[in-house]
Image (cartoon, rainbow, N blue to C red; front, side, top):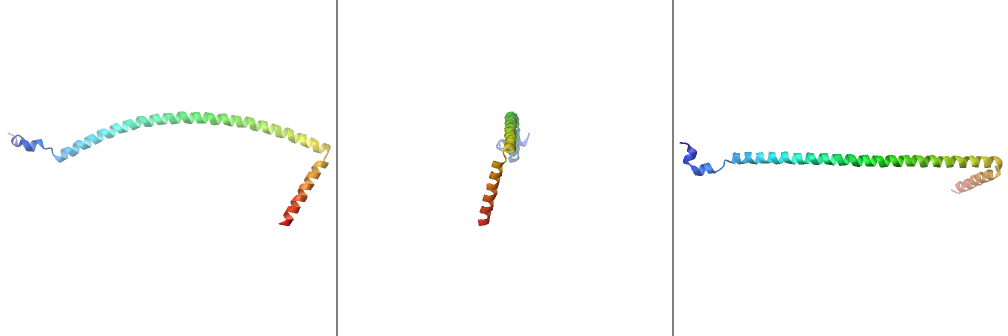
Length: 114
């Protein structure tokens, strides 16, 4: 005969160490479950972030191409205007000399007052 059979009230009570072990077991199980769930969410989040980054990259590349086209167009217009201005100065340099002289005179007058 065993002592546990003789003292049934003692046998029904759980040992505190057994209770702690059971709680630790539950905690480990919950932690594994939480880890799996977070891992799945992280993969999903990573996939979504990758798609967003690809979309943003495509938009930025398109803006870059548009900016390059517009920059080339502006450079072409500026070049044509510069050539027209150079030809106009060659034909009649007096207006350019007058504008430069007036600018020099105003600059000199303004800086002498200070």
